[in-house]
Length: 108
Image 1: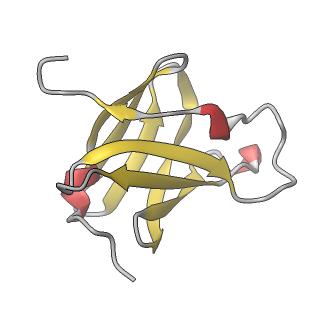
Image 2: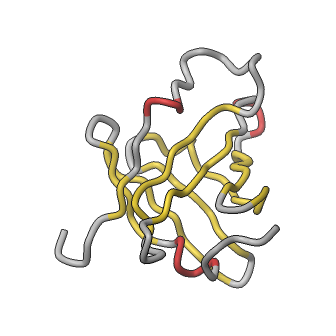
C-alpha cells in the first residue's frame, strides 16, 4: 500500500498536551522525527502500510522502534498521530501509546 498523502504533507510540528512538541521533517531522504524535549528521540520514518510508518531511532541502543500512525479527517487533513512500540519487549518507560500528537496550525 501507499500513504494517503504525499510525504511532504506529513511534515510539520505536532504537539502532545503532556509531552510537548514533536517535529516531523521532510527532505530528499524522506521523513524524520525529533522530540523537542528528548534529543535522543530522533529517527527516520519508513512507510509501513496505509498511513503508518516505522520510526527507527538513530540511537539504536534504545531498542524501542515504534509505529507512528496518522489519522485523517474526512477531508484528508491530518487529525492526529499516535505511536506504539513495535515489540512487546520494549521497555515500559517508552510509553508511546499515551502520546496524542495533534498538528499545530500555522498561527500556533
